Amino acid sequence: MTILLFKRSDWIDIYNSIPLYLSNNEIRKLKSIDSNLSITEVMDIYLPLSRLIIFFIQANIKHQNIFKKFFSKKIKKVPYIISISGSVAVGKTTTAKILQILLSKYPRNNKVEIVTTDSFLYSNETLIKRGLIEKKGFPESYDMNRLIQFILDIKLGIKKVLAPVYSHFIYDIEPKTNKIIQQPNILIIEGLHLLQNKLDYSDNFYQIFISEFVDLSIYLDATEKLLKNWFISRFLKLRQKAFLYNNSYFHKYINSTEQETVFIAEDLWDRINGLNLKKNILPTRESANIILTKKENHIVNYISFKNN
Image 1: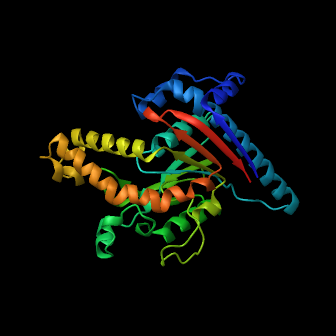
Image 2: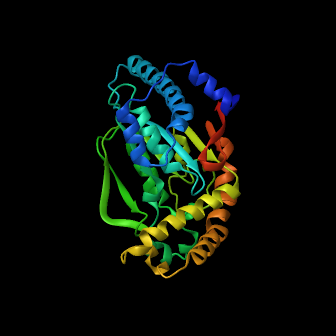
Image 3: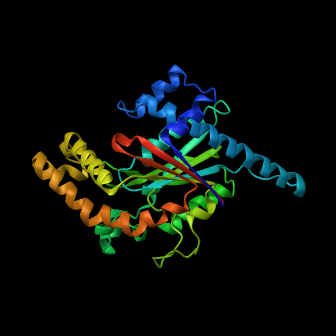
């Protein structure tokens, strides 16, 4: 096993040695993710990372071609699966969207889809019945059988695979709504427990793990202090938007002051998200192929690679 650790400055030196660029259109797409997204951060960290991932994918394609040639058999198109895991509020969704745009560059119009494991949470109704609503986001709160079946279908090359859709606005699965995944070149799946390698819940009849189907795993890391602060900041943003709508799950906090909102967010972190981090998420970190360690403002400070 090979482990490589790069400080930010060393990683940027690698970027400077490789001719990489972003078009104006790509910059516009990146800014549409988040107007506060630093294009410098994208250029310094994620653009060279995406180029390295493309090399990994090309090697994987060569391997598949050898398999096809040896067995003289037509093999269905199988997407390359990238997992992005880490704590709540660490920036998994933003990272997935950045990589989606960057990985679409090579080759041109590369088809890249994103799925979140939030879509495979049990509905709030089911969680309440099972006494798990206070453990939403813990491994046992997911319909793991459905998630694994989804990944199996993707790996079997099925042309059209359906995924449920989760709404952070209503804080629940959207009824009668599905996302259609049609044989992308790359599938990015982001979530809390994608590196899980032990069975802590009884209803996983497959007895296998998502990590077994993933071609490349990325873990986003930060200190708990930073993660908690980012979670509180995100919750305060909800106060400016989602709290205002009657059909939002968070409308019940409409009359909370800013100080009360901070207290609610701190309580949610301490009782649920922080506990989940320490018990279930952080212990899986070292299983990742790539670890991006962040400091303040989501700036990546260290990048480590593990090649088994």
